Length: 228
View 1: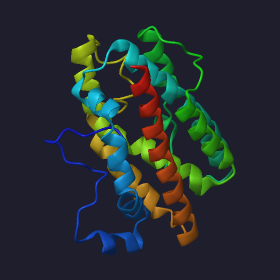
View 2: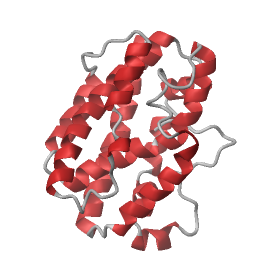
View 3: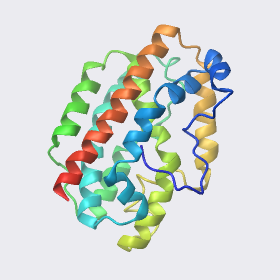
């Protein structure tokens, strides 16, 4: 979702050659492989490229945070219920992966609206998430994209701190939730997801939901690009 600087390894982009073998035993490898084109379209959007270069204004940044708040609030409400009803299927998720509180803190710090209205892209994505509220596999597919975005967003946070005069902490907590633990946290998430043992049908559902999330992020970026 968030562009990764060219000098940084792209942990969400599959390597050629060994991908088919990896897919056979890994839902995470399958998610990566089968959504790679949508991932590229989302992260190469002009608004996303402007974020990674630090060339957006504070107003544009806050608008992005506000729309992502609405998406995370919706998804995380459903994930909490799924964790309660199917804890074993959701054991890759812990409370530290929830982002609503960080988004509210960043929005308040940057002078945004903590009760924003959804733009069309966010509204459509929220409808997709709501329709899947009783399907744990779909919710995990949506979550995969947002959790994976932390691999690139920590570099966006560094660029925006320089551009917008933000210090580490409030203002960029959403983009850089794990700090120096980022790589270890993503590795653990991958391992935990692959250890659950999802069926092919569940994996199919996760891939479909991940694709919807990537498409939703692209549409949100469209909305913000038009406004900017």
